[in-house]
Image (cartoon, rainbow, N blue to C red; front, top):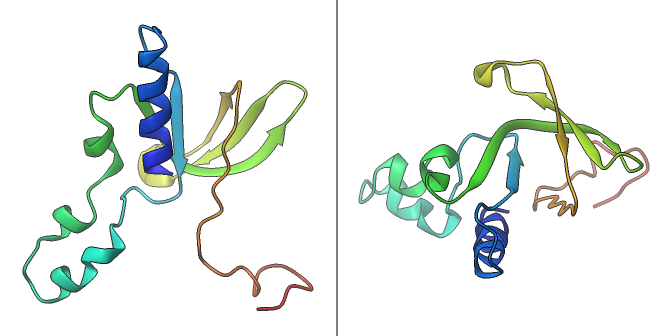
Length: 118
């Protein structure tokens, strides 16, 4: 999701838009670079090197970060309702969109979806 957001913002700038209008919504406040977890466990790297916070990574990119979970999508009005994480202020935020990329991640949801099997 991070790389998609960064590349979309870069594409908008290359197309002559003054300011990128990309929003990244994630339930986690950090991007975890999985290939480097071994180095973290062995003490070769610090946690901020393997799992930096999104706000630090996105600084100066034009990508806006919302720490929370999308709870509803209104296709007619092209908006997402986001439950903002309590540590980020809580509450709900309505995020408008023109185009939407949904990344479901790699975690199995079989235990959370009725009738699903692994």
